[in-house]
Image (cartoon, rainbow, N blue to C red; front, side, top):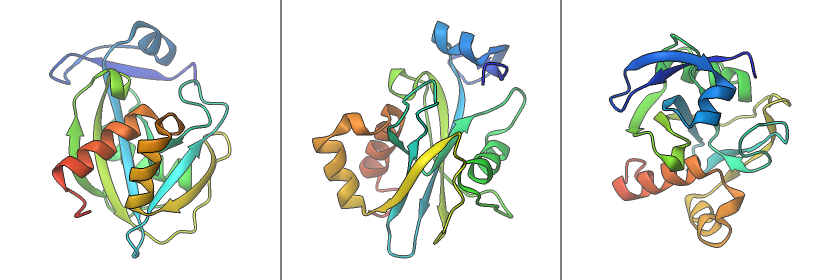
Amino acid sequence: MSDEIFDVVDERDEVVGALPRREVHRLGLRHRAVHVLVFNARGELFLQQRSMLKDNWPGVWDSSASGHLDQGETYDDCALREVREEIGLVLMSVPGRLFKLEACAGTGMEFCWVYRVAHEGPFVLQESEVRGGGWFTPEAVDDWITHRPGDLASGFRVIWEQCRRTAVLGL
C-alpha cells in the first residue's frame, strides 16, 4: 500500500500533483476514489467488512467494493478494477454511475463516483482487502446506521445518506 501513488486534486477535482498514499492521507489532501454498490434481485445490498490490515477504517463495514484511483487512472477503470480485485466480479462494461460526491471530511477528502451493479453473487473475497461480507436490506442498513454508525465506514454513511436523500436507488 505504501508504494501507491495518487493524483492530488484541487477543489474542482483537477489534478495538481501526485504523492504517495501515506502522504496524501497524512496531509489530508484531496484525491479520488470509487464506491460500487452491488444489489441482488431481492433489492439487498452486498456490504463488505474491511480487512483488519487496512490503514483506514479496519474491520468496519463498507460499500460492496471501493478504492482509490491510481495515478492517471479514470474513475470508470478504477470501478472495474476494484470489483474484480476485492470481490472477484469481472464486469464486461462499466457499471451505471449514480452520483459524484465532493471531497469532504466524511469521505476522507476523496472525490467519489458511486456506481450501481446488479449481481447475485457469490463473490470471491480478496483476503488482504476484505474480511467478510453479507447481503442486507435497505431497511437493515438504515437501522444499522441509526443504532451503530461506528460499525460502518464514514464514506459509506455519506453515500447511503445521499442515496436516501435523492432516492437514486428507488429505495
